Image (cartoon, rainbow, N blue to C red):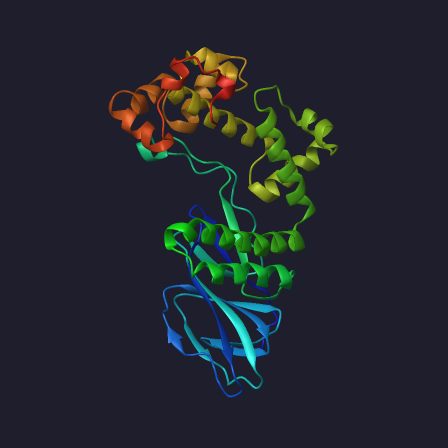
Length: 327
């Protein structure tokens, strides 16, 4: 029996799921999928013709042509019954190094602001707005032709040398993930999510400038109070909370990548008063700006800075403008 409730498997980014292998199988009437337990890999089944009868623990599905089913790596999978007609399907195995979970329906986006970071090399810089990729447990393909084309390309790449095919395989796999995720998000996107994402994008583009709730309202053509409610509902913070957080994260990069004085760093990220910048910086990081620079840039901290950002402040010392730095 097919379950009616929509189930979603969510993957936290980073890290991106990693493609392992794929294949195409043809079953004659009477043949069936093998039983497996704890495969250790996600198994995406996409049916091209016929019907595949599959079970996972206590649930069962009849996966028909133009439908897909995602089997989990730590469950028992089995044939619910043999195929009744000739059945053709693709199978795709992949790893997920990051956290994942199965839920009823789509989860809300993760909070935009991480918990306060401890003063340690691994927490010197906190990437903002982690992303969650959602894949439907069982679904009809929105673009069957495009999906089958991508899978056929992956199959052909198995005949090429691995050194030639690796990156293209991973790219094709990520394109498949994107197709599933975008379809899922578009079908369930709320007005609040749309407004919150536009607000976040506006702040990232204009954080160096004076920003108020009133200015956001004028720029986005919504009442400021509505924008605040949408941000709280979606990201669990206000626009001004996010603006402050984002400015401090940009300031961290400038402190590590340049030798600009604190006052110049404050001005570069949108603060008009250096003392207020220093107070906000310490509240968010646990360190004053100069303490942060010293801890993560000299000399023990230099290794942490190199590990986190892949480069030192040499580019800034060589005269690279602040607005040219990779942020």
